[in-house]
Amino acid sequence: MKTYKIGENDYELIKDYKNGFDYEAIKGKYTEYFDDYDYILGDWSYGKLRLKGFCDKKNPKFKSLNDIEKAEEYIKTNGAYECRYFILKKIYR
Image 1 (cartoon, rainbow, N blue to C red):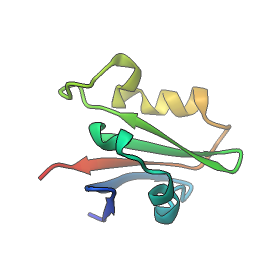
Image 2 (spheres, rainbow, N blue to C red):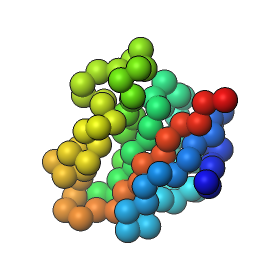
Image 3 (spheres, rainbow, N blue to C red):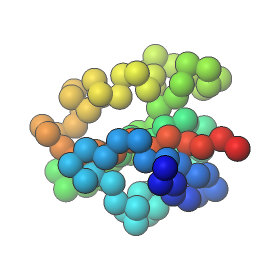
């Protein structure tokens, strides 16, 4: 399991589609806003990295809009066609 320190949190890379994961790029875009989310999805659309937070159903911040089970649907409807992307899962200690 490969883990990454981003902000104050540790994450595991659970999906890396078309080598979309770029550690330096996400460190530059990450803000405390993402601390409440269980997952971070990053996609490269039109040459720019975009980040979105997702949650497990047990997370108090859970809403249907940020359900991790809808991550693939999000990429298909909101990402550029066949864009590179990745999903990080927060490691709780």
